[in-house]
Each structure stands twice: as C-alpha cells, then as structure tokens.
Length: 168
Image (cartoon, rainbow, N blue to C red; front, side, top):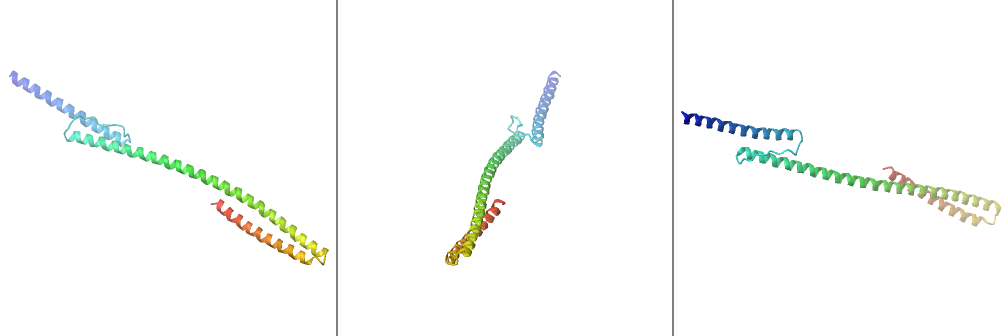
C-alpha cells in the first residue's frame, strides 16, 4: 500500500504541476492577446516550450513585433511628410510674397505710366493750341503718348495676371 500511496501521490502532484504550468502558459497567452487588443504592442509571451503552444507564442510575439515595426515606420513616414509639407508651405508663402511685391511694383509703374500719358496728351494739346507751325511736333508727341498708353494697358494686363496667380 505504501508504494501505491506514494505512486498515487506522485501522480496527483505531477498532474497538479502539469495543470499549473499549462494554466500559467494559457494565462500568459491570454494576457498578451488582451494587451494586443488594447493596442499595447510591447507585451510579449514568455514561454519556454517547443510544442504547439510554444509555437503559437512565438508567432504571436513575431506578429506583434512586426506590427510595432510597421507603426514605427508609419510614424517616421508621417513625420517626413509633415516636414515636407511645412517646407512646401513656407516656399509657397515666399512665392506669394514675391508675387505680391511684384504686383505692387507693377501697379506703381502703371500709375506712373498713366500720369505720364496724361502729361504727354496735355503737352500735345498745348503745343497744338500754341503754334500752328508745331502741328508736326504735336502729332509725334501724340504717337509717343499712344505708345505709352499701350504699354500702360499691357502693364495693367500683366498686373491682373499676377493678381490672379497670387490669389491661387
């Protein structure tokens, strides 16, 4: 009876130990899966088994590690894209400022050309009224004034084009 009792006790203790180890392994797997479900990609399963349960734990660890690597790559790519967008935005701002400055300069030039056109027309009228003999000179001044008016119109058209570009 003693041997039977000892055998029975060894069997019960061995069974209890086996169930306890299996239970701990399943708890470790469950905890890792729960952490993964909660978006925690740092938890790993630590099983030192070479059977099917150990293989599942290794696959879970590998999949979690690869998923974490993907998120790191996505974060890096997002940071690079954000930096590129910031650089592009800055460049576009500089281009807009340059376009606006050019538009202002062209507006000033256009106003100056309009004033000069008005002055030339006044000069042409004064020359025509003052001297009958200066008719030829007045016609030439009128031609210059017309050429300047054309230039002023072209300058205004250019300014409107630049205004349209700066508003894009």
